[in-house]
Length: 432
Ligand code: SF4
Ligand code: SF4
Ligand code: SF4
Image 1 (cartoon, rainbow, N blue to C red):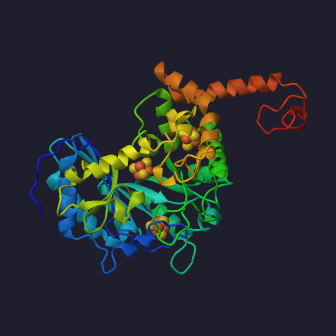
Image 2: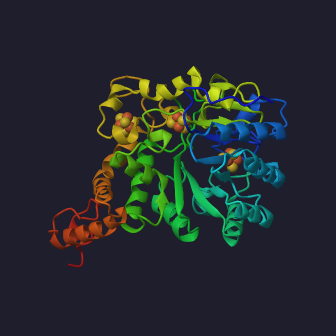
Image 3: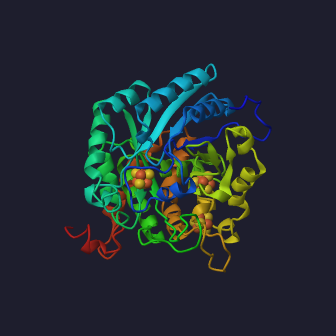
């Protein structure tokens, strides 16, 4: 144990931390999981966070936050494999160490397969916000999300989700987009909205490096990875459905972050910010890494039982990690019209060359570029509504009115206003 110290100059007023109490241990074996191989970093470990590390983590983390709200975020592997008593204790420790007037939100990312009534009662009692990993309807979800015997996990996830609904636990959906579900944006989105009644949806691209180390090395990707164009089409497909029906009702994180960038607000997600470095990962034994995607020896900052967390976060190494996102941005990105929204994306995906041979371009660039151009006009309209103190949801009426007019005015040989690429007379104008 170490005594508390004042926050070192240079430490950010707040930072995010994903804690992994079981390290990489999980009851599932999703084929694209980038984290399972991290088990090899700790060869003889029992992969269980001890009570001592747990208390150090919570005490140091809460002390380091100079803002009135903090989040204790659990992730994996599969955190529920720690058992419920571990989380009961974490709640106790938060109460013990939080500053007066501080509000602490507990969150957990889980595959939901091990949940029962007792877990859900606990989540409800302590207002946990639960992120459920699910990739769409059964066939699309089961493509890669299987257990260690190769058996599909969908039914078990849905069982856990039904229990959470029964106990009115707050949940959001985290969907990874990959080769198998990437061509079905509307089906996936409607499933979340209509079947799961999810109000918060996070979309994450699977870009899985194909190498022996499991680290962010090399420039080959597996066939499970989403293709750049596929990623762009997926986002545009979901956006089309959302912007016409669900603005203000369903929160799609990526669209919300984009709107913030169109309004000119400080970027709220590291991936679409000029710099990063304030979203770190804590392993089960107290090792602190630069980011959840860089749990690798080169990005190990130190152990919180030996060095104060604030010192590690403020270290030159971590500052450089965050600045590299900007310093390594190729001029191709700097000159890009949608750079204000994209900022080059996540450095973990920046392993391809620009058309003129500069390194550091995002593998997903083509998709991002298409998507951010595609949403420019509706984003401008929503940003303008916001600036005039009106609800962005008004865009739905504006688009509907515009579309009705476009359909009414379309000539037989004009392109159909629905965007199909067909002539109006062969598409929505057939009946006229
Ligand atoms: S549930 Fe999460 S941690 Fe477990 S194998 Fe799947 S992706 Fe990996
Ligand atoms: S590497 Fe990517 S995920 Fe990690 S902090 Fe930077 S932008 Fe965020
Ligand atoms: S869209 Fe492509 S070129 Fe533009 S900032 Fe993003 S990654 Fe760079």
